[in-house]
Length: 197
Image (cartoon, rainbow, N blue to C red; front, side):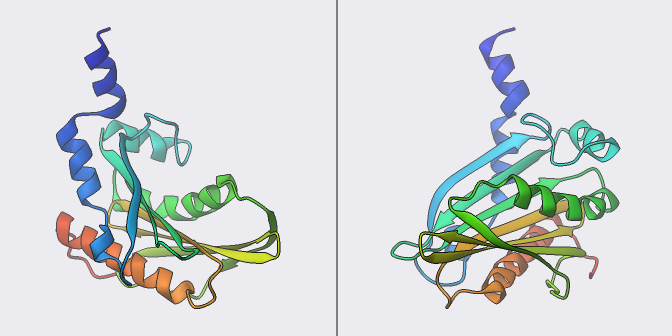
C-alpha cells in the first residue's frame, strides 16, 4: 500500500479534517481574554481506538466521520482546557454514549499527584446539551489542590466533552459550563441542529 493511501485511511482527507476542527471553539471564542491554543487534532472515527465498545462504536466507525480535539492554556495561570467533539451515527447513539464517554475519559486521563476526591455531579444543566454528565476530580500536587472538571453532553449526533483543570479558586464549574454552552451553540449553528433540548 502506498504511503498516501495509508495516511488517507488513518488520518483522512484534509477537507474533512478541517471541517471537524471548524466545529470546535477557537481561542477568541472562549470567555476571558488571553487563551492560547496548545494543540489541535482531528482523526477518522476508529483510527485510534474507540471511546465506547459494541454496536454504537461500529456504527460510528461506519459513518467515516471525523472527531476533533483542541487544547488551550491561559498564560500566567494554572488553567488548562481540552475540548473534544465526536460524531456518532445518530442522536440516540450519542445520548447513550455520554455517561460512558465521561467516565472513560476521567478514568483514563493521567494526572500528576494523588487523587483525593472523585465525584459525579448530577444537578448541572448545560444549555444546548440534550444529555449531560459531569464529573469532578481533585488532585493533590505537592501542597496545591488541582480541580479537574469533565462536562460531557450530546448535541444532536455529537458528543462534546469539555475538560478543564485549575488550582485557581476564582475559576469554577460555572466557568466550565459556560464554555460547554458556547461549544454546544457553535455545533448547533454550524450543523443546523434546530431541536431544543
